[in-house]
Length: 163
Image 1 (cartoon, one colour):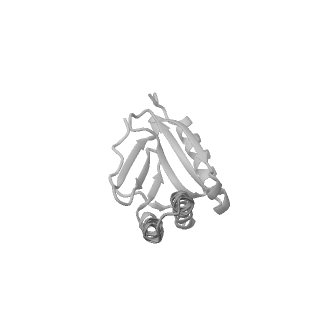
Image 2 (tube, helix red, strand yellow):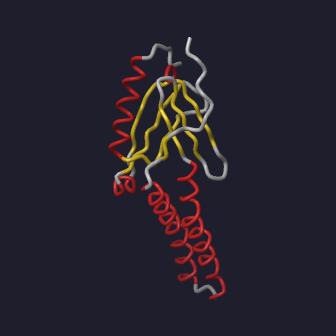
């Protein structure tokens, strides 16, 4: 029988480049939100007063892009031990997840276009849990590959039913 995992914050931060990744994602969202607003206003010949709507969108999403990624970086943490995978994430609602190694079913890495640009990756650890997978986003791509490799080796060496 394994001892209970220690209840403490995970030890590792995500890569500092994750801040830039989260900012770029916010800017992409800004383009997706404001482009249609501007197109409708320009095509419809709307009065100039209605241009405050896209301006408001720029202000809100811009403020988000400046503030939230730094908060996320300070909060997001992860750690893998011989007993469990620990994650702490969220900026408004914080989520602390602990997944016992014996319950791990698969380990995947993901590299979206912006992550590839910044040489970052996300590691997804699928477990036998109704809460779903545990994700560690914003890792250095090389570190993510090594984490997936070592976590897979640890999982294979750990007895358990993973169901």
